[in-house]
Length: 117
Length: 113
Image (cartoon, rainbow over all chains, first blue to last red; front, side):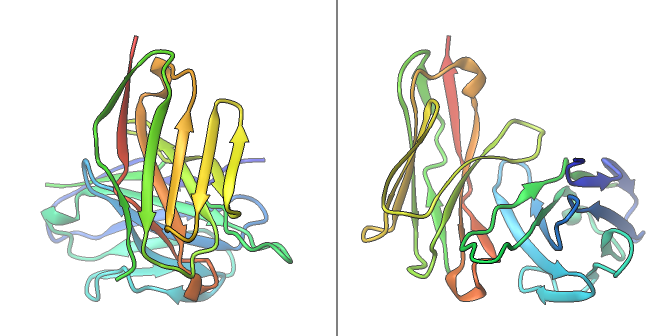
């Protein structure tokens, strides 16, 4: 059973360009989360999505950032007009909710390291 | 703002000793708690979760939860150099049905050979 997959693993962009990060959840998982991690810092929640729905985007900057999880295909985190401050590791995690389960175990992908020149 | 607090460390212990990692949380609605290990440059990997008061043991790891004190800890017995990593405490927010998870900043652990 393949784990969470992310691509690309490394992405270099110049200021003003667009960055597209992709995440394929584990098989059977319908919940996807995006986190950002700056060097030497913890994980910061950005957005939580289910298929075709954004459930919670309270951690995502209001401008330039958007996320989607279409019915078919991977979840995509899109950053428009990137700036140097966007340089970070972006992790995707996925989970499933089983009937009667009160906890939410998340499995992480390998991350995408974004560098903005 | 709901928070999860951890001592950033670094925590340094000799090989074979017990490493004790601590975490406090502010959301009384959180029902379950997770410990992740993250090696430098790698993604977090789940090592334990706990949702009942008391202790939960898994091999060399023991998680402890005290909901009254809003405190959760992770003990690593017989620490090995390979345990050197950053340990992240995570708490799903109760008012989101447990799906929005807040992570602590992590505690860096060094196990000296």
